[in-house]
Image 1 (cartoon, rainbow, N blue to C red):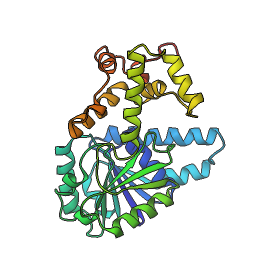
Image 2 (tube, rainbow, N blue to C red):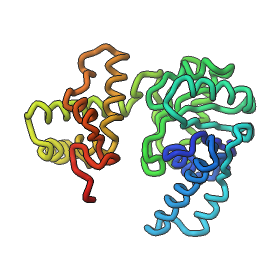
Image 3 (spheres, rainbow, N blue to C red):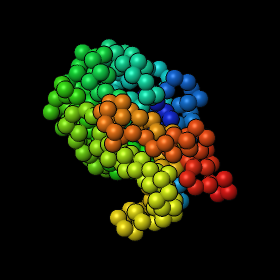
Image 4 (cartoon, helix red, strand yellow):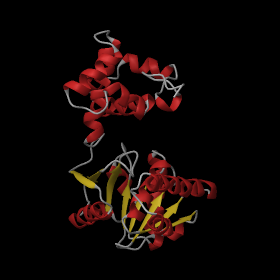
Length: 284
């Protein structure tokens, strides 16, 4: 495996492209518009610049990394890739159409991976004729920082595909875990989002204050961040979307969203990105 294509040059796609290039791979970064591609490349350049400032990277190495990344709006360029990682909008119709196009463009040996955090790997794979070479490859945000990559098997994903994906993850200095079959939330979100939702229940029921809830989990469970701090960082609208998807899929009351969470989202209190969530970030 020498060449990796990343589809989608937003924050996540750019982060994946960055770690792949730093791992020594030639990278094709593709998006629909030239401006989006340039924005992605600028973000990578900025991220690497920060690493230089803190002494983790030299200027020559930064130049080599940037030299391995080739931006384009031409989807046909991904035909050169051995691995394609899709990181576009979380919409099944969009992903299926894209994977059908990739199936006709890419070399027969190429592996097609989706960075989806919630959609069905099997349904995405059904748009192709290479179901054995389709898998989920879920990076966590921010991709250059978080070490974990969840690999998700579809019904027809071959062991050779899993082996190749695991080798790729090692080469980019990440740690992989294998999800044996698709399930909403995979491992991390399946456990983390209900945990955060329960903390919001505790706050909404007046059992403890915001600060005491976060302090309790930080000092009582050894967590670096409290669950309400974490919710603000992830985005309360994202928390709501994920927990609702669990509830709709499993029809289990343990996944019902906190009414306090729903009220916060309706009020536009989405966390750090809106300037206010459980904490106030307006004056930071």
